Image 1 (cartoon, rainbow, N blue to C red):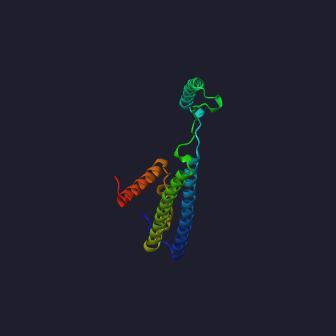
Image 2 (cartoon, rainbow, N blue to C red; image 1 turned 90 degrees about the vertical axis):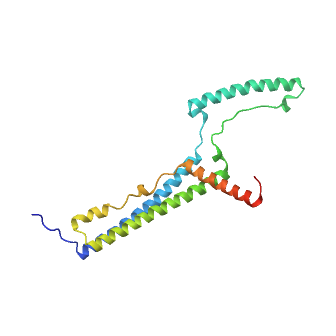
Image 3 (spheres, rainbow, N blue to C red; image 1 turned 45 degrees about the vertical axis):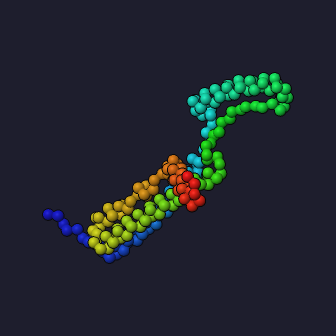
Length: 196
């Protein structure tokens, strides 16, 4: 014969509600911390410079480009000499490696940063809303149902981990959002000022 579990006392209910509130604050702070980490990771990705010698394929491609440039430069120098152009005024050709793409432009970085920040802000707000809703649901259940002491731990542990609400930023997704915004602005301009 199983014994009927006792209900929580008013004191236990109060204590559990306070712990839920405290845990909610900690989870909200964690959401803010994770948002900052997402932004830092985005900045790290955006600041990354790739050198040709860090990849075997890139290195071979750069060596081949330099070989072709040297041959072409010899042809150009020979033609300049034939045309009587002094070596100091002669045309030249060169090849260089750009370690960054569009993210080398400060205006592009500013655009990407703006989109990343708004995406992170939205994810953070969604995470905090989810945390607050679950905390309210738990406090309501604790008080309304008069949880049994044996069940209190289950309810406290049921606050959703923030990882479910916050996901890592996808750099490609940020670029797509920005491109979509640019396309919309361009379509608006065409509509307002005429054109194709």
